[in-house]
Amino acid sequence: MTKYRKKPVVIDAIQFKIVREIPCKFGVAKEYNSDEIAGFIGNIVRTVTEPNGKPEGHTYFEIETLEGTMKASLGDYIIKGVKGEFYPCKPDIFEQTYELAE
Image (cartoon, rainbow, N blue to C red; front, side):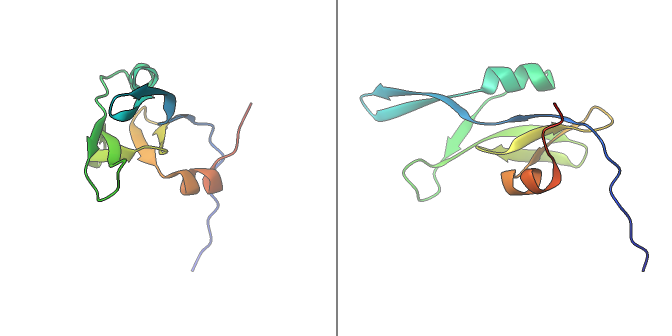
């Protein structure tokens, strides 16, 4: 077995998050940073909330990656890869792998 170290690479990333909660007759409407993400990836982002047995449901958007279409869930980071590709990364993996460069 041979050991390898990951090369240090600075990446651009954005987290999919709630930016505002607005009271409404159904409880609370959530506004996401979809426009900011769309500007980052250069494509339209449509957020979807599907039932998952919890009152808040599962909110995500689909992103085209080199491996096919993937779901980016609320809280995930969207990373721009070294070849200009985009892909989602779970927050725990992101925080173990990356640190703030600036």
